[in-house]
Image: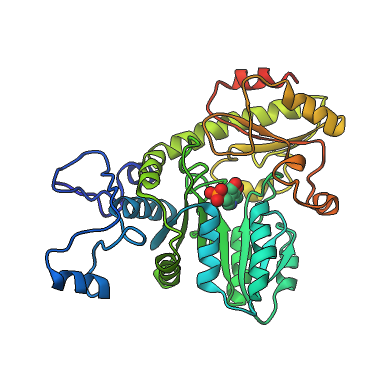
Length: 390
Ligand SMILES: Cc1ncc(COP(=O)(O)O)c(C=O)c1O
């Protein structure tokens, strides 16, 4: 009965087959093991598994075959030695920081990261003595200057949300390596179908699997990927804290990964067309999309991303009133802050995803009242354009 434990290094093949370990029933689709615990042949086997003397499943808080299948498949797609799956993207970030930092440590993070990550850092990690300095994502000098004696981690998302700002990962990795700092990239906007941060020198990749890995807006989940020596501590945190991915969600994500590449290609193609269309409209003052020549880091995007991705944003003439009017008259697009779905979503960042920031913080991050974000899906591009009435 052929299993598919080893990866082939061909993305398309690994996306549908990597990590498969068939049970005695010879199922073709990946098995869904909805079980909390596992049975041992005898007391000796139980003792050996618990002590770690022998490998094998013990309890689904930290070992489950379906979750392992997802971990192995995603690891092969990202080119990582190991992947640890978690219950959400936020718990992937939590697990990474808990595993790698101690009180008194310092972290440098991009100003343009997911708002909830900033809340976690400022309101919770700070209580345990972790300090975070925020810098402009694309400004390499600022990263260099922010390094302190006890800086442990650099944390970025590239492209950023919602302005699609980009940093040169290779250059940032050189800075982090020379200072013995670990570079973490939240790769949820691009996914490994478009960008592979570990190949560019990053130490850790984080995912909100909730987004494009699922791809169909069904389940929450996350992942941390990197070298085995780093993942060892992430695994210990997972085992003791229980920020565990459910096997059911892992099974959904396995199915999502099978179509990841073709979804990312088609959704990027739609986004590219939509970005060009918006750029040609006189009602739109600016479009932010890495696939446009007008993008501030177009050449870096071209070098490190296979495609522009499916997220773009734009500023409409007329401020918040005009932005809300445009959003409210859509009939096809979904007004929701989520992204990574086959269904196109539209949101007003200033009053949703970025509403917890102060006006000054929003101004500083470039999120104006006239900004709209669209995460482009798989609908016919002409229907998406028509729904915007631009
Ligand atoms: C870039 C990024 N990272 C992390 C997260 C958090 O993921 P989750 O909602 O799965 O906890 C999100 C969610 O929107 C995100 O956009």
